[in-house]
Image 1 (cartoon, rainbow, N blue to C red):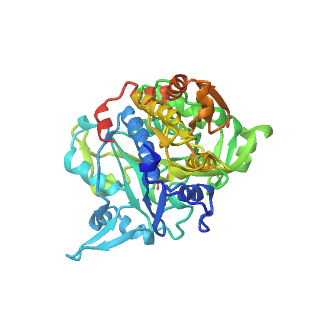
Image 2 (image 1 turned 90 degrees about the vertical axis):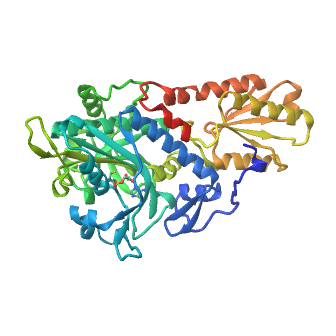
Image 3 (image 1 turned 180 degrees about the vertical axis):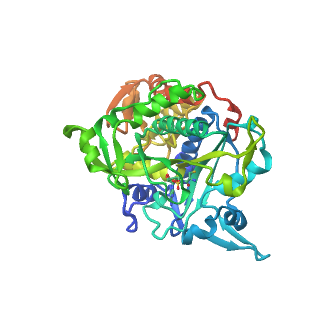
Length: 464
Ligand code: 5CA
């Protein structure tokens, strides 16, 4: 993309309404615009990051064997009357009446709708296990929407639902989700700690939330410093292998970690030696639940088991805050000049800054860098405007592309351009060809991660 043809409405002033750094930078970098309280338009740069996060979530869900679909945002109230949640949900639910006086609602979550789909089409234990998921807008009329996209009223969420014959099978689905989430967040450059949590309005006994450590987090977290040193890394997981999933889960959750809701100070002191005890604030970027037959019983979602008996299925639901993650990643990765995108989610792979727009040699070198990166499947953002160098650098720093190639007549005389890391600020002089090669090498692991087998449903790459 050429900046002269893009839509990147950056702001010079710091918007007064933004209390946290991610909200400030998202407004300043022209990523979002508020439409009304807690409801945002995603401008092109923000939309690209949102799509990148969504793509990683899709890939990792499908790698774990979960099946994508799409349910609507508007739901009939009657389904929620069946589960008993229509009244229980309270004023956070946006209730709407259509022209036929039918009660509708803007879905805050989809347990009822998916259970209805299941009971209409699945009748035998032979069709299990089954996990369906979608990524769709949700609405919760939060009393205090704040922090931009981190606590919106309208927000984008991945929600997945498993259907299993037995409690053991459903617990494997739970474990499989936990493990796949570890890999998902790590690909986004995040360390998300799984913590045992309270279940709230979703219900159930077993639940973990995933927290990203950041000063602006809404919950206090107590943890063993060893847990933040654990890495999922390149390990290959067979998601059908129960023992393997259980082992990974134990590795990550046996290290003590609790939120303020579930913190047991005496246990914390017993289990974690003094020098390893930490407390910090955390942003919740996902939550998984096992709730057994809480929805399947009242809604009649049953299957025939091996003995021919009708039994309610065991279920769980599993959410990732896709739009919240855009803010959470910025909270975890920024400095005083702006955002620092992790390579896995960056809106453009590399910036190109032309220091002397209109100088023939400089323009030609920029064009060939642009073409070279594009030929390797990378997407550069080329600042081809007439702005001063200082303003170009400030914009690149603000929007946070992890790599920048700076091209000027002086360097070109010696056959070099400058490759700069946004994270460390370190620069290196390279020939243009080597700069392209180096950027491609940096992104190679991220490309591999996306393409790696097993990917049961590669076709969805084409629509994103
Ligand atoms: N049905 C279950 C799992 S699919 C569910 O709704 N879980 S949840 O309530 O925990 O939401 C899942 C994730 O959505 C949360 O972990 C959080 O990251 C995100 N989320 C929840 N509320 C908001 C909000 N108001 N704004 C932005 N993201 C939110």
